[in-house]
Amino acid sequence: MIRFRIAALTLPALALSACSMAPKYVAPPPPVAVSWPVGDAYLAQSEAALPLVSYTEIFRDRRLQSLVEQALANNRDLRVAAANLAAARAQVRVVRANQFPAIGVNGSASRTETNGGSTGSSTSGDRSSYSLQGGISSFELDFFGKYASATAAQRNSALSTEAAARTVRLGLVADLAQAWATYAADKDLLRIAEATAANAERSVTLTGARLKGGVAPRTDLRQAEQVLETARGDVASQTTALAQDVNAIRLLVGVDFDESLLPGGVDEVNQSLAVLPAGTSSQVLLRRPDVVEAEYSLRAANADIGTARAELFPSISLTGLLGFASNALSALFDKGAFAATGTAAASWSIFNAGGRSANVEVAKAQRDAAVATYEKAIQTAFREVSDALADQGTLSERLRAASSYTEAAADTARLTEASYRQGITSSLENLDAQRSLYSARQQEIAVRLAVAANRITLYRVLGGDQATPVQ
Image (spheres, rainbow, N blue to C red):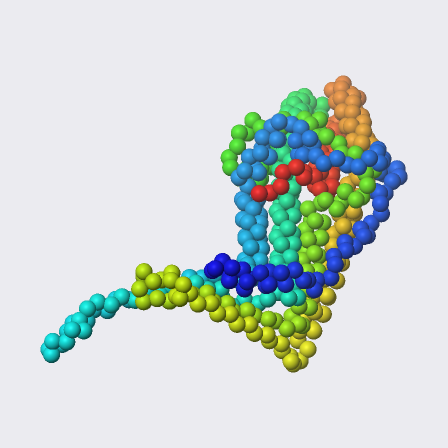
């Protein structure tokens, strides 16, 4: 009987809550072209759709994969994102609870002891009283979907937060790969600086001997010493850079790590990074985490319109009470002890100076802003991918040119030094050739690092790893 009466009071409310005043959500068409730009700078390789890949398919070096696994388990930014996601998911349940009545129970017990008076009255004795009440508190019938829209808005907000957490995860993996590649390049630069310093030291020794023999002027020795000290300063700077690179990787990983997982040089990095194909449909941007985040924010704004519209209509509250009252525990569940009451009330604000209508306009304006934000997110993503693909299309030529320049500079330095030793060329020419070689080697390392950075950037801007969501 109790369950029947509870159902009689609650089922109408639940049935009426299905109505929604929210406008039907229609995703705006992507404000970008259907494919990436093509031309000499882009080298479109395939029009096939880009497959979903994990970071293990792009970053194939097992050492880097090990560092990524540690970072996903220990990075503090990722923990913050996961905590924010958990809070957003819980908030959905908080808002959704408004769609249902709250049921509560309260009880009391009392005992009275009395003794007879001096006249010998026989009124002495003990008396006990118990009461128990269980009730459905007052709640509003969701005729116009106000609470349903609010729940939908909060749910989409939570999904937006989840996409933001995926953005953090994607950025963490890409940042760690970039730091790993930067360490490799700095290690190469340190080796070049050390080799240049060793060569400059031999040049200083040779020039000093020629000065003692009266063959070379003192200016030759000073110029050779300048090259030597420049290289020594670069050795110190690169030693510092390597230590800072390790610190950066440690921060990203979140814990101390085995330094044997670090690369030996930038060539190792480039050989281990897979190349993502250009020429895929720009529709893949719809799965980028930041674009997904913007879309769910748009959906939440759309649901907020339904909430504001529902405020324009009357609110109907229902108060239901199912209770028990008895003076004796044994009679607590007697048929006569049960009482059921129910009341309903409706309210509608006659005049509020247009405040509720203005709330609808506010919600619509916020929805329009969310549409623009969503479209800009797609346009920004399109620009970032197009820039990365343009860079990819010219990097091979830049690397070829840098390698050829280094080879020519090395040959020039070798021939010039041989001529200098034979007294054919001047010390200044020899030093200029050494400086040119040193600069060429540094520039080639910079281009090789740019190749690695471009592949990592493509992983990031195309949406990258979709296999494992943030929990």
